[in-house]
Length: 349
Image 1 (cartoon, rainbow, N blue to C red):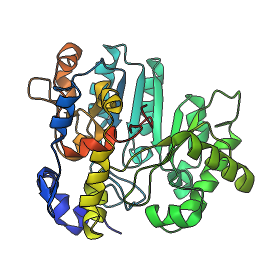
Image 2: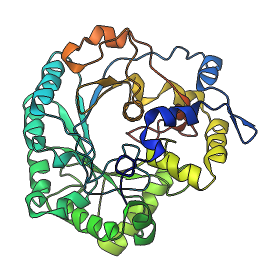
Image 3: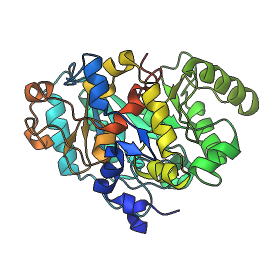
């Protein structure tokens, strides 16, 4: 499977995606504007609650091409963050009390300066999260020592594993992904990740394989721990449930299967004002591979930068101005406010 970008698919154009999202009438169904729901909840305009997380997308290059990927990442993507831009991020970080830096991609480990960036963040005394797809650890011998590197710098590893069965995982992420993921998880366990008392945190991420919302996070965590422990001897700390947002390749899946309208209706019907008050964009700043600033990683992939009143690039970072901005919203935001809520840290309520 190639990325939308490589296939020159219509949805590779973010303007086309936004046009789909903006349709108020789809097959006769009325889809109310997200802003209307926020207004009813007393949350419009949506404002930051204070920066706590700096999320950095270090590039769209990835060793996988997953069916649901909102980044449209893959081996054919060449966008990559330079060390110069990384240094701008570090300079901005040093000016703040932001305690967590969340590194994502693509496969962030494929950036040639990835390890240097982790070392610099560690030197600043901030917690580092790495969004690891697991298979990168066993993809090439140059990555085989990543578990030891992560442990050395006390990196929190957040890993994608859509299911505890090979069939459902491979259907979403590619043939053989489950087997390679299990191998990588065992390597992480061997250096202490997920082991009680080690202080090395290993979290798994579950997102549905179809046009439905995730189940109860606590119940799924218990089931994952039982099955992975019993069948593979694997341990981990927490399971995070994330709702698939109608963006990029997941939007393509919804449109191709005729599920777009019904999926949007499900998200809208499940709108939760408590989840809306806790959305991750209120405490997170998203930085693109080129240094552009966004309210969240999903807005980044839709080319929706922060409000024009705020700095647009990390070189112009100004925490006060960013905390004073209005957060840019669109219809995809329903995904973060449905049911128990969804964020890069899992359910929000």
